[in-house]
Length: 201
Ligand SMILES: *[C@@H]1O[C@H](CO)[C@@H](O)[C@H](O)[C@H]1NC(C)=O
Ligand SMILES: *[C@@H]1O[C@H](CO)[C@@H](O)[C@H](O)[C@H]1NC(C)=O
Image (tube, rainbow, N blue to C red; front, side):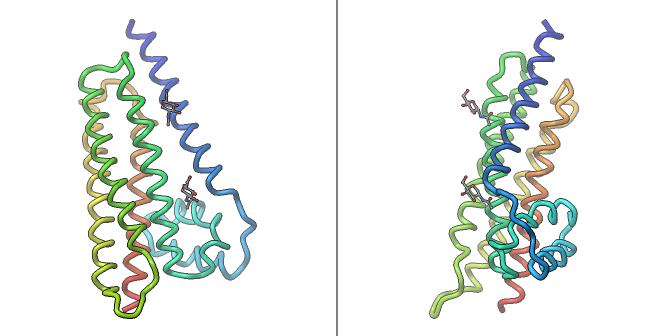
């Protein structure tokens, strides 16, 4: 029984990974990068903790971002939201798999809850990310966004911590790697939001 369920879970995890990547690729058809806008992305990404992941992710969006710190921040929030949401959906599926050990299923269910909170926080952030308007408390709005994205990052870390080797008896490398990606996307979004907030004051 152990060997059979091990392989079917591994296959399911890989399938989930492919589904997530496919969804992200469909959402962002590559656009040929143009010089100045690409340089803006590269320079901005250098100020994040994950410059390579950042550049490969956001160089697809040069025409959408057009050198704007606000559009960079809102695109990063959208990427973080999409990645977190599709990961949450995949984990809901995986947590129902019969071959899981009890501690594995519990860790995945905790992750679904934590990443689900991140999804809500990122959604609120995207909604609050409109341009400054006359009579609008822009400072308050950006500081709310900073709070929400920081909270999302904390939730992602909590999920990651729960997927310890003790809880996950078998090889859940793909699952861990996916959560790391979710957290890195939130971290990049936070860096861009912070920069936008600092520039606009
Ligand atoms: C996120 O997903 C939505 C819906 O699938 C899509 O319209 C949007 O372009 C995606 N965001 C990015 C930045 O790719
Ligand atoms: C989750 O399972 C449902 C129903 O089985 C399926 O339609 C969906 O594509 C799965 N989602 C992911 C991300 O694997």
